Amino acid sequence: MFFNSLDFAIFFPIVFILYWIFSQNLKQRNAFILIVSYIFYGWWNWKFLSLIVISSFVDYFVGRRLGKEENQKKRKGLLILSLFVNLGFLIYFKYFNFFIESFVDAFSLFGKELEISTLDIILPVGISFYTFQTLSYTVDIYKKKFEPTNDIIAFFAFVAFFPQLVAGPIERATHLLPQFFEKYKFNYQQVKSGLLLMLWGLFKKMVIADRVALLVNETYNNVGSYYGMEFVIGTIFFAFQIYCDFSGYSDIAIGASRTMGFDLMKNFDSPYFSKSITEFWRRWHISLSTWFRDYVYIPLGGSRDGKYRTYLNLFLVFLISGIWHGAAMTFVIWGAVHGVIIVLEKATGTFRKSIFQKIKLTKKNIVGRLFFMIVTFVIVCFAWIFFRANSLADAFAIVGKIFTFDKGEKTIISEIGMDSPNFYAALIFIALMIIFEIIHKRKSMVVTLAKQNILVRWSFYIIAALILVTFGIYGSYDESQFIYFQF
Image (tube, rainbow, N blue to C red; front, side, top):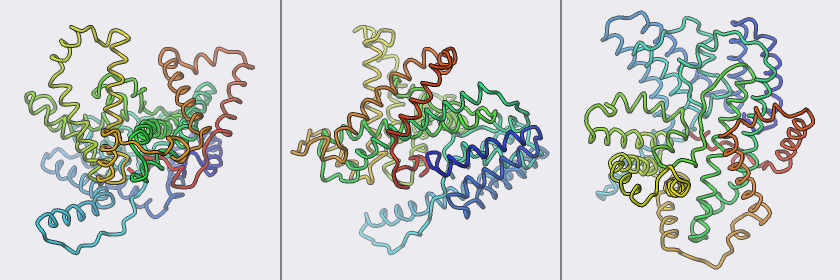
């Protein structure tokens, strides 16, 4: 079930009303959340509900045993069981065919052609997200950072919580699970804040992301038909497509949770205002970045074993992040590009700082901030080429066309799959979003709006709703689904 679908428009109000009816009895409330979460996920494909149920059962009982077991060898065995089940599902559904193809390709390099067929495997929506969420529970218990719960319904509801089930934010048990044991009272201001955040998320998804997707899909799906400038525009548009698509999903998830009294972690913090790639990853997909920091980077040794080991650990984390995003070499290279830049930033930090200070180009003045933001955005866009390209060959072809300034006779707009009004509307809405984020960073728009009189407030609500209805893109399944559903 998509957030931007008629199904959800019917589903959520019903859930919201019934939720507050059941809210005063914790057991009934959590059971209700679990049932509606399974309905929400099963609406897409009910067969894959079994994977969530199995993962939940395994980690619930492993968690309970870890809480009682003192023998370190047995504790490691329990942790390995959890890793084996959860990562086993993830590897099979997401990477099995990738391993087969890579194996065949490796032999073909030596002139040996193997006749091994891939399997027709459907990737379950959100498996990467709920796998990481439930794994963090057992790992934290293993490290004795968190006490296991004895309430199986609350734990199952935590794993399957429908607002963030299929694309995050990836919540930690330490933050979200205790909230299933708290009673909430209906709070009008909190509900209104949540609904406004959902509206903002739908605006970013339907008005911006789905609109620029028309241009992005046309260029990236027809690499041989377009030239350098078209791919520059297409790549910049993809940068905003993926941001508005994914942050829009996160806003809707956080907003929907807020209307029910739950608090989800912030997942995006205006990442394109970043002045370095290091800062970008503190602002982009925060729940995943911090997950990799805590459960991959630090266990690898973090920065404890000297600078060269630190560089290796940083690079490995981003390489793994690339593989997590998709079973293709394009994602591996995307992760590697970010890893290399992060390492270079860390290795040359002192030297670069001294050089820029000499020419008075620092993050403390407006010229310096703009310079570093533009450079960072260009690097991020370059990496997005590999993320979005349908194949490695396409990615290198696009890079080649951009850097050789390859030009053609086709017009930039009309021949690219968007008529002029849609193109300029996209630019206007992107500009409005950027202005909104700049203002919101300085002063909460929700708080500002709440201080206005009822006429101003409701005029804003009606205009915002009309913009969404009038300018939203209503496409097919492939066009309207959220990008991160594939991960």
